[in-house]
Amino acid sequence: MLYIKNFSILGGDKRQIALMKSLVKDGIKIFAAGFDNIAIDEKIIKTNFDEAIKKSEYILLPLPATRDFLSLNAPFCDEKILLKYNFPKKLFDKKVFCGVSQNLRTLSPEWKKVDLIDYSSREEFTIRNSVPAAEGAVALAMQKYEGTIFSSKCLVAGFGKLGRALSHLLFGMGAKVTVSARKLKDLAWIESLNYKAILTKNIKHHSNFDIIFNTIPYMIFDAYTLAKSAKRSILIDLASAPGGVDFDAAKTLGIKAILALSLPGKCAPKTAGLIIKSTIYEIIEEINRRKKSETN
Image 1 (cartoon, helix red, strand yellow):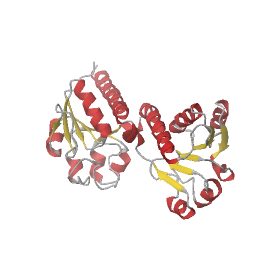
Image 2: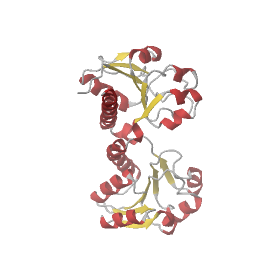
Image 3: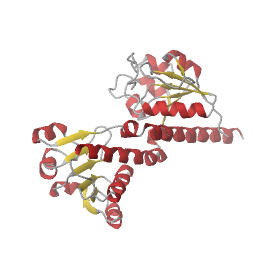
Image 4: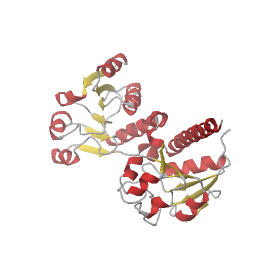
């Protein structure tokens, strides 16, 4: 049975607030820092960062932990929490759950000494998170596109977990779905699902899409590809940094291109928070099983 006495949450958005509420219902005492500008459950103990870190063995940082590679991602905090040098030293004896851990490890050598556990890199997390991300992408498209998703011509660039969930959702809504991939086996899967399949490198040879969704985290839509394929499209970039769209070129070409990151936190924070909780619980159970096997 999983037993956690308390947990400290440092910064984050509405996902972390939903997560805290759910943890409290599980009987876990929560210490929260970085939520000065928003009301949270009265059972959650608001405190400062130093006190929150001292109170718990388990520390949770947001997803991503930092957006500017300088300070903690804490949109509801008055104080800017710098992440270099002194901050990681406070975490040396803690188990620190975070999203996109590589962003932290590049900040200073001290972060390499912290026991960082990247919940966002877990396959079960990315699979579960693909559904609210896909729904958020479609909701955004419905806001920006003047037509209906039904009968619209949509391109999904990339057939990873998000690309699969998004393609399925669009197809179910009656869109005419084209999906790009690099691997022949993925193209075969795309065709078997009754979508049109194209090679990602050949996107520039296809056009007349109403909406393009990019899920590939490297430059796909450069100036040339934009000019050839996206001139009459709304382009929504869902890929993690560095993304896959040349936004300067899109602006020059008059293409409506939208960077849409952290959609689960914006569109479905409750579900996204529960996904984080489930993943963290599974990680802690694995840690406890490993400890038990080592002592036997």
